Length: 256
Ligand code: NI
Image (cartoon, rainbow, N blue to C red; front, side, top):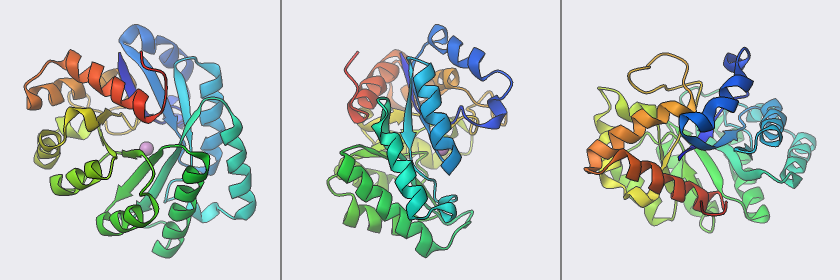
């Protein structure tokens, strides 16, 4: 079944129908969802969703656009969430020089702190990196050598994707690969072995064709799987089965 490795169902865009949607997911072919925190408040919401639904897990961490709110006290409070059963990763964490909400120095500081937290807790990491290719690689090479994880919503070159794969990381592929102008992402999918690809929505954002611009949801990953299948000359079923195995391995859940 489809494994959505990166979703934000705590987002207010799901306010009206969150429960109905999440309850329906298994009947739409979606077996597992990891709800990923971004803001400080969303850590609690992610954990609550994981408690409520057997097929939902949580990642806890602070997105680079949001790290400005962090101090030692909040960081210590955030750590408490990792005592919960279904928290499977630290994320999403990283660098975002596109929105540039926080200084690069502050972003790098909390990125490194959260990588060290993952090391201490022995958990995989969910990495967000936008317009910060070189600095992200630098931090990963120096602070994430022994870690596992995914470069989520991957947007850089195929050469850099291959480098991350050599380092033992997975590449997160979502709706963007179905866009007509996504030549670069199609090259990335061609270059990365299927065993290192994860499916992700980043919902409510980045819906694939034919829903581009609309609210995204985990079941739309079928269209992403079909696109990857076409690029690799295999069936969508094989893409769904292999990426599910990959996700369970990375998040350390029992094999299906
Ligand atoms: Ni995200």
